[in-house]
Length: 498
Image (cartoon, rainbow, N blue to C red; front, side, top):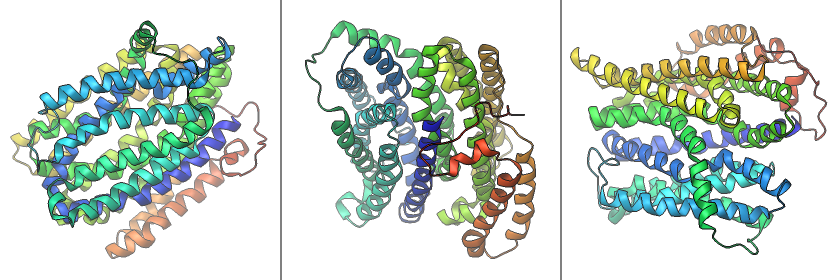
């Protein structure tokens, strides 16, 4: 639990840094390149990231299990085990990149803006390797590297590069794609340096084809879970690209990126949660796992809900940052923020289910994403039938995501509760009180000029929510998340969630 507190606190800071670095990319991209260009970029990125997760072979969570057994039980060198994963990932990445170069349509369903757009495919191996290196560092409870790579270097490189490329005439047409590519490789280098310092180079290592084949086959449930979990956040963008215009995709992508900020906070605990869970599974301590799920689940939804309210209430002013053309996506933004709050229980539950019920978890995730895809297409067609504008199309995709994530949370939480034979819920009555107080303040905030809404209204909503949740919701076992002490006095059995 001490590791969870320290890692979560570090990555919560990383979330704030990523927020500061990510918003300039959206503002600059939409203002300089336009809604349609950003829409084409969005359609490409969702496919690239899905293929990158496939190429990572589930090592984001599977590496912790391999290191736990390989190092502690078999005495293998940690660096050798990590390099096995790297080699397997590069092998799959080479195949995927080659196929996409031959058949690029899935990445660019609406065409390319310029000759440089195709280079975005080169982000796939770099993205996958970064996931593996960060998972290796997380096994040693080094979350600071994840913060530097994902929250500082990657978003700020992307934001600075997208502005720089716009003013280089030869690169102007592919500026957004090139900025993304530069950011991914900058994050890879940021992750590689501390990895080499802590693990070093492998010794006595050589490729083992049979072992690598087994690694790839065993990785299917974990990789599938990663891809499907991420796919629920990406398939809506992909389907909008297939069935609608670049403008609709551009509007939705802006709202999606703003709404993904709470989702990134939710994943703050994932890197450190995996090794903690695997160690408790090894000793069969299911009660401890249930306690960690309840504790972390409440931390996530408490922090996430406050941020969601602060972004949803002044949503029209936030969407206006991208220009008047995308203000119509305000409804989609509100629905997406609600969806991320609803999804918190599913994500925490899946962090355990991928180890104790891999196949069932994968089957549920597959069913949920199929439901989401059907709902997304159905709602898009319904909007087209009534001849409504692109903003309603974006809202339809957001509603489909909300319903699918809600279904996933209910099913996965119930399954985990049954398997652990202990409560795992993350809801407490204080969340209602804090939300009510924030909404009341928000009603005053939206009456103010837009710049005041953004500069002072958002902090006021956050402060109100934070004060109420701290006083009524956070007990001694929760407040340690915000203490800087190295030895944490955490009650052995914090009260179960409501």
